[in-house]
Image (cartoon, rainbow, N blue to C red; front, side, top):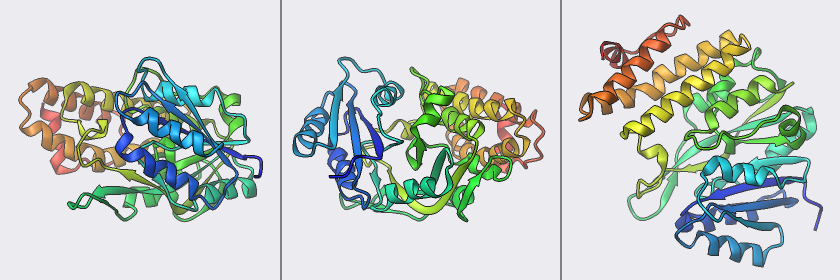
Length: 314
C-alpha cells in the first residue's frame, strides 16, 4: 500500500445510522493513499462500534475516543493534532464523499502549489422512501467554485467566501500549522469563521467545479442545522455569520464582505424571517432584527429582499 498523502478527519457524535456510508465513501476513493482519523465524541449510540469495526478491518482507519462529549470543534482539533501527512481534509460522519473527491482536491494542489483547494457540494435529502437522493449544485455553491481556478486569491475571487464548510476542502497540513488555524471550541457553526480565516490567510487557493461531497439533511431532523427555530441556535448562527464578516473586514476585503453580505441577505435570512413571523418568543424577532440592522450599517450596496426588510422593524 502506498504511503498516505492525505489524512481525513472524521468526527462523529451519535451518527451510527449514517457512519457506515461515510466510511464506505472513503474506501471507494480513487485516490487510495489516504488515512482517516475517526474521532468518536463520546457517542451514546453505536458510533464507536462502527468506527472500531472499520479500524479493525482497514489499517488506514484510526479510532480516537473522547471520554466526555466535547463538541464538533474539539473533535476536529483532536484529529488535527494527529495529522502526519502532507495534506488534510474533513468529512462529517453523516455525509459522504464522491469517489473522485480526494483525487480532485489533492490533484489541484499538486498542480498549483496553493495552500488549499475547495470543491462544490450538494444536499443529500430524504427521498420519502427511507433513502436519500443527491440534489443539484446550488447557485451560491457554483458561484464559489465554478469555473476552475488555480492559485487564486480572495481579492481576485471574492465569491469564494460563500463556501464556508470545512468538508469541501483539502489543505496543505503546513498551512494549518504555519497560520495557527484551529476550530473554536464550545461554539456552533464553527466552520464559518475558520473558512474566512482560511481565505484571508492563504497565499493562494484553488477552486474546482466538481462536486466532492454530498451533505446529508437528516430525515430525523437531528442535525443542529435543522434547529434554527431555537433561540440559542439562532444566536450562535448569527454570531458565526457576523464573525466571518468581521474576519473579512479586518483585512479590508471589501469585495468579499459585499459578496458575503449579499449572499446572507438572499439565502440565509429569508427562511429565518419566515420562522420569526410566527415564533412564540419575541426575543427571536428582536435578535434577528438587530442582526439585519447591523448588516445594513456595513453599506455594501447589497439590496435587502422585501421578505427580509420587515426584520429591520423588529
